[in-house]
Length: 60
Image (cartoon, rainbow, N blue to C red; front, side, top):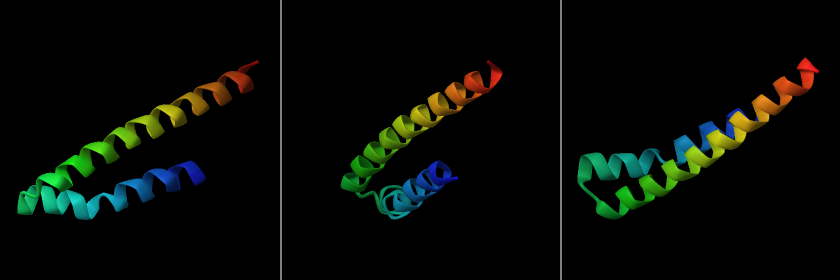
């Protein structure tokens, strides 16, 4: 569950920047949101690969 916690922590860390970008039109916050979403994409891909590898190992 540690990986799930990483995803939750990353998303929660972006909450303030989402608010600043969407509600206050802060462009710098938008840049931070984009960066954070890229990190989320990378993390999600890593987790996806781990799950697939574990699934394949158990199937052997």
